[in-house]
Amino acid sequence: MTADVPDVEEILDVAGFDPDESVLTRRQAEVLALRERGVSQADIGDVLGTSRANVSKVESSARDNVAKSKETVAFAETLKAPVQVDIEPGTDLYEVPDLVYEACDRNGVKVPYSAPEVMKLVSDNAGDAVTGREVRSQILVGVTSDGTMRVRARPD
Image (cartoon, rainbow, N blue to C red; front, side, top):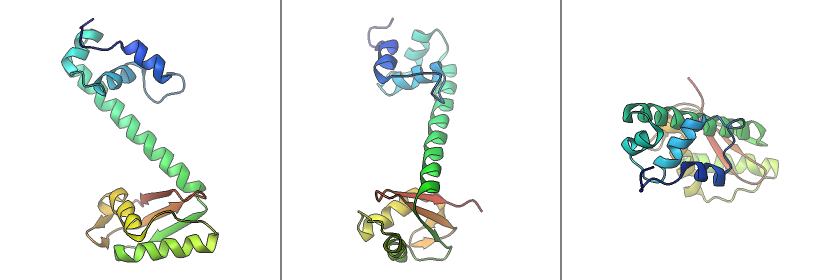
């Protein structure tokens, strides 16, 4: 094994990787574990006995799976959120905090975010649904009972 490359089996064991419970294959987990530690794709290919191009494909698939998993978790958390606020296209981003606060007040949920923080969360997590101060397509803001906000752009 290359001297600069950490022991991937040890990394996965310490992290508690279980291929039966993960959306990642073992190979995807190995590649991500090493890439997150700064190991080059070429060195990973050498260690795993494959090409750099294959490592690149495995890494890309793994990152796609992680992104889909995060989206699934956000979706599930939004579904169970006691507060759900639809933000219509054309809404000024500066109006969003009041819409969220009013809905939370009606449901007895405390929001631990200031108005600028709410706007930033919405803007950062809505993707192309927000441009500048304008909400360009429908957004759903879910607030869990502990005040966690989840923002989802609704599909057109």
